[in-house]
Image 1 (cartoon, one colour):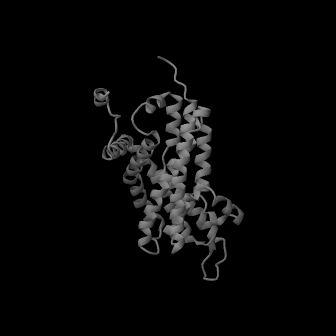
Image 2: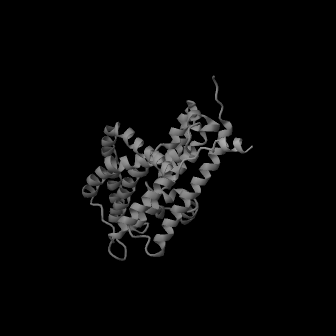
Image 3: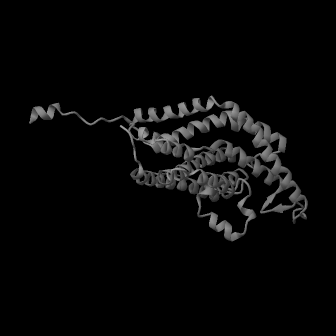
Amino acid sequence: MSGAAATRLDPWRRSAAATAGLYLHFVRLAFLKFLAYRLRYYTGVISYTIFVAGYYYLYRALYASRAPGPGGVAEMGGLTVGEMITYVAVGWIGRSFYFNNIGRDLMHQVREGQIAMQLIKPYDVQSVMMFEAAGEAVFRLVMFTVPITVVIVPLFGVHLPPQPVLLGWTVLSFTLSLVVYSQLNFLVGCLAFHMKNIDGVLRAKMVSGDFLAGVIVPFSFFPEWFQRVVEWLPFQAIGYLPVMIYLGKRPGDELWQALLVQAGWAVGLWLAGRVAFRRSLRQVVVQGG
C-alpha cells in the first residue's frame, strides 16, 4: 500500500504565475491578430469622424432653435451646446476603445464546431475571450482611439474636463465599460448554443445597445420614467456614466457611486456569463470520429 501510494501521480496543477502568463499571452496574440487588419481601423477614423460631424451639425441646429436660458445660454437635458458636442465626441471616442465582437466570435465557434476544441484545452473559455478583448482594446487604443481623438478634438472644439483629475477617472470608467460590454456580449453569445444562428439578435443588441448606452442620445433627453427604467439595465454603465464623469456631472460621492455601479455590473455579468455558459454546454453535440 505504501509503495502504491508513493508511485501515485499527483494531479496536474498550474501555478498562479503560469496562469497569469497564459492569459496575458492571449492579450498579445489578440493585439497581433488585429494588427494584420490595421488598414480597416484607419478607415474607421474617417467613418467615426463622419458620425460625430453629423451629430455636431444636428445638435447645433437644435440648440440654435431654442431660446437662451436664465444664464443666457440655451440648454437641453441639462447640457449646453458645448457640453453636448463634447458628450457626443467623448462617447464615440470611448466606443472606439471598448467595442468588440465577443458574441459573434462565440457564435462562430459554436456553429462551426470549434467550441469542442476550446473545451478540451486547459483554460477557461470565458477568461480567454475576456483577455482577447483586452488585447483588442489595447490595439484599438493605439491604432483607433488615439488617432480619432487627435482628429475629432480640435476639429469640433471638444472641451477638456472641468478638472484635470476627471480625465484619469474617465479612463478608469471606460476600462470598466470594456469589461461590462465584453461580458454582456459573452452572455448574448451563449444564446448560440440554443439558437445556432444569432445574427439578428446581435444586430438588434448592437443598435439598441448604442441607444440605451447613451452614445446616440443622452438619457437626460428622455422622460423621467424612461431614465428610471434604464437605470436598472447595464447599458448606462457602458457609455453614459463615463461621459458624465468626463463632463463633471458626477461630482463628489456621485463619482464613486457611478464607478461602483459599473464595477457591480462587471462582476454581475461575469457571474451570469459563467452560469449561462455552463448550462449552455449541455446543448453541445459533437459529431464525427
